Length: 65
Image: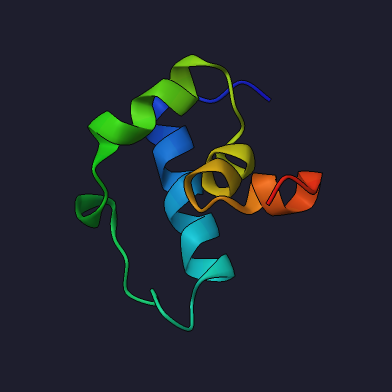
């Protein structure tokens, strides 16, 4: 799926709320440093892949951690 930047951002926020709701239940778009996340979008990563990378879950899944 091809996301626009606003759609992608909204998806990232929703994933963070769902996956980390116990510790970040009230995270909003304004809480995120989007300049830091923009490279994930520019690389063509899905919102889920970006969250996994940002929270280092992709390392755990690959067995590298």
